[in-house]
Length: 351
Image (cartoon, rainbow, N blue to C red; front, side, top):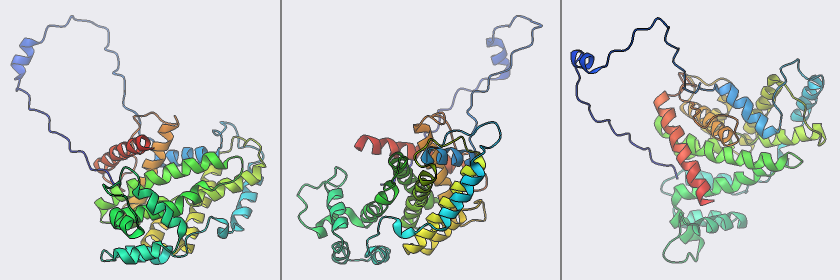
């Protein structure tokens, strides 16, 4: 559930002090010819989106920090092999999507969809039925009376809750289903990012007039292709410890992951605006980008920063408000970052 925005209380007005009274009340300072020391700058410098993105991909891909020296000698050959594997990557190797998903998503777009119709569609996929029934047994949805039917569960969840349960059911195995020596840690981190990105994108989407579910869906699938790049790198490394690869190499991995995410989203027949936002995020998002594209770019940065802070890559007080000029108002970004922190804390407590 998208968290509420905390309202700031206005500070109480202080008594007005005239310059004359202030001077009289102030004790005289001793005269000194020693220059005053410079005031320490305690504010944390806002990290750039590019730096956040690089460190996020290093964390997920299991790559060490870049070497200050020249790029590793093996890097050009690794890059060529990665491009070849990426071009030949078969999207059908990703975990399957329920065959009923496109029809179910179209039905959920209508606010007038009948619960009986939704329950009938969900009932075609046994795994999806299990996820819906499991969700209604949690403390978030637990009712006074036991849920005995799928239709009761659909009514209890409501359309918004059903959208989220179905989306999570579909994407979680895709993002966590990596194989190889780097797969388990990467899968957990990708899912942690996806949950935060979806929450932040839905929150920001409300401020830009986006469809709430499309924004949530865009956030969930933003890094659907990154798990595939994890597997490709694992094949290239053959289980060996990766060398210190350059920032340019990591950017290439991120570009390939974004391309695979978009290809997968097309194969899954996701809404056109979601596809457009994913395409925009392959380049530099600015003021002229679509509302969903701007919301997704900022949400991606906020989710990545949250994950990096959690893993000790950035200080806890790091902020993104002034790192996206022209994309989103700083005050909106700051409020979303606070809301995301509250949401993440509540999710961790529930887990």
